[in-house]
Length: 424
Image 1 (cartoon, helix red, strand yellow):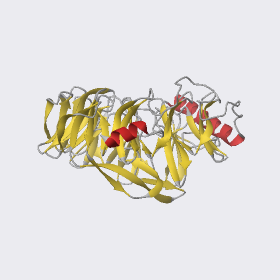
Image 2: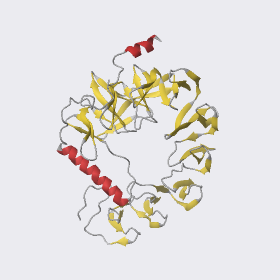
Image 3: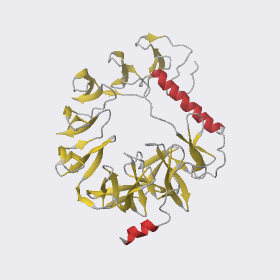
Image 4: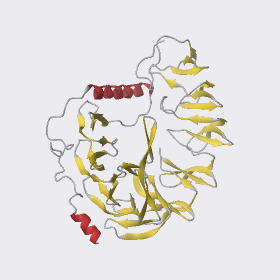
């Protein structure tokens, strides 16, 4: 209790007094007019917009890229698609926006502190946390004086930092561990275990290992006051559906199951491995075979595949007897297993598939017709004019959108991996 009273009275644990975006609360700026975009940032913006336009022409699915974090003269902020600043450069680092909020970093003595800004540049939380996680289902895990708690995007504390590790379940029930593991690494670059790329960053070809904070021990459930609803007894917990807080994966000695917020089981623990919902289904492993459940936890594809099916639309690669084919959402084969690999590529329209036999690559279109039999040296890409480009025996080859070979020409190929048309 004494520690909690100390925390409540600590002046460092605070947020901006006003939640309205003003000249002073916005980005930590001094109220001056934001500077114009410097040439380097303007180039970054033009390249990002050009990539978006290419993606539209090719039919490639792209992740939302704006506001886009940028840095200039040692200070970082974020820009909007229209070339205005969403976050005026004032920080050492600005992370990508997730759920409309970005983590920002400032230098503090010999290390760093972290806070949060929204897409308007409004500071939600002043930089004061030693570790700050991304937002997930409305909450973010933060570290304060070696303990984890949860904050929301309204600038309020949902769960005071007093646990080893925390994860939101519902709006008023939270998973916690009493202890944590800290794997030492690069000072001032601490990350929570479930952050994307938390363990190792590669900068200019050099691996930099971050300090990673991870859960230790069993998981229990608490309310907003930190009072135990269920003492720690679960071996592990994971997010089931990021868009629905009604179910979570939880692990017991019997395996993984789906648990409701009242701690009754929607699906009894029995699975050996599980994954989150993606494109409407979640994978599970039973008897060393993979199947799929829907968002309600109902088995839609029985476990019979050697690899985890991963849907990106109506089709998913699946493997039996070490060979890959494509299945539909009932588990029926649409392309019989005959390839050594089938991959989705961000260089091709969605629902087109790269195939591999040995070291040779081929292509299936969205009707699953084999446009190019495996013969290419590397995975193909699509040009913005609809042609397909690949190489055979290290010589560039072009194909029409229907897969017919074309004579090489001088036009080059403007694809997602090129920023300008190539010469001869």
